[in-house]
Picture 1 (cartoon, one colour):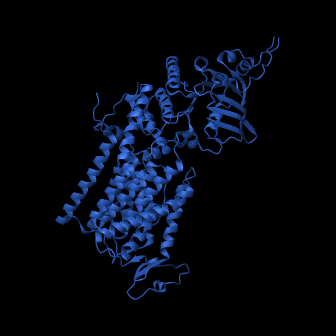
Picture 2: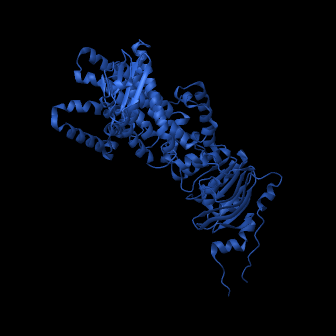
Picture 3: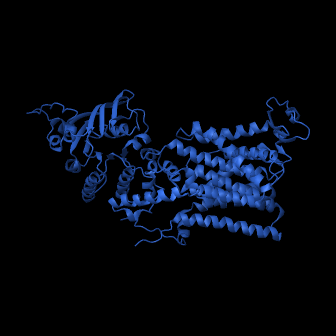
Length: 356
Length: 277
């Protein structure tokens, strides 16, 4: 007898999408009610960005099994290229949602190219080289953007590197009416903020869609296979470098899109925002949510972005309490006693004879 | 009387039974050095297209190294490997697999966090063609090929009566089932030569008997050649049509099971030299 077989992962994926939709609706209602505090309302877009960052980093760390310590670098690439795109397309594409979408796609493309450049040499190696190289990449991108001058006028884009420290935005030689987009260490200032919560919601959904569907296709199987056992994966004909690149570049591109949205949410943004701490913060989301567990990443990203705001009451001790909460969560989620306790309430019991 | 050393059988003895066809695999003077140590030297062997061949020898003789050479986990420092007449020089492990050599491992290497079915379908990757975008956007190519892969995976699993374990995590399978799954995974790559590294290790006599039947069944259904490393002499002598004995990285004897059983060089390698009275 043949019966309709709903795989367990299909159900989990469906619940993840549903959870995000419900959260979006609830937040929108709270926002229109005015129940949500001002600071939290301002956090909505960054939360979406961080959720998306966590899911995309989970593709590299959880699904591919390679440690990346420079995910904020890709976010930075996406953010600043997205800002440049959105600002220079202001007159060409007047429709804001379309301009935002185009800026995010350009941000994703730029980050994907950066990912390919970083990944091509490193992913051929086995070991922890990716962690070292991405760590350096994040720092290099920060320094590069710090001396980057970009402006836009009727003649098009102007770009210069302020390597000697003597150049200013005036050296770009822009015509009358030109706008300065990125001003070196000052960062991108005067950006028209066009990011919306709805765009953030769509970003999270698209990121989830891409990562989940990639995971459950032949490419995803190959990626997880080479994570579990690289030698065996090679022995069944899997081109390791190709699939590592696929996962890493996809992850970078999604981070770029999230970065573009993040950048277009603030009128002023500096490159130092995307430093090593931010990379580690995103890694913490992934580890806390569980490696390879996408809904876990979503929850961890949302909770840990909101937490510092909620901990404002502790003022000076905020980061201390934050660290303690992190440690407690790590301890309890990995506690075998609690795990067995909660597994009693699991709806799904493993089918199939486990020991024949 | 103390036995004389028999002359080395001709390198092509094994092919004589498959004389009408070219061999699927031919090794010519294959060798590898690790530093100053010649782990395998002058390894000559030919395997017929539907032949079950055994590779035996004492511990540390270099049997698994031969497998690693054939699958290019190690690049040979000497000699040539001809797979179906084509030189596999400069091929990677993945390319050799796609050219037709599949293997299992002595210490099981499954994809533990994938399900049994996924372990099998991942091995069909080279035979699937839909690209990353059809996978992400679930285009018709995805559904078509995934359905075929799913059906073929269940079919292959049913050889070992494992179809009902399809959704179990491979890592949680009992030991014997993990060994069988490795064979199924190797078969899923559609090989013309299957290398089995100690398939009966850790199995009890009844499991071994079942395995023997299955190895024959695989050869008969898929019409492929099988080369196996095994310490279980009962299994080797029963199912292998040709046997090569390796000691200290060199082939010391080749022939049919009967030849090998009475070969003094083999007896010496396994039991030691008889002292002169």
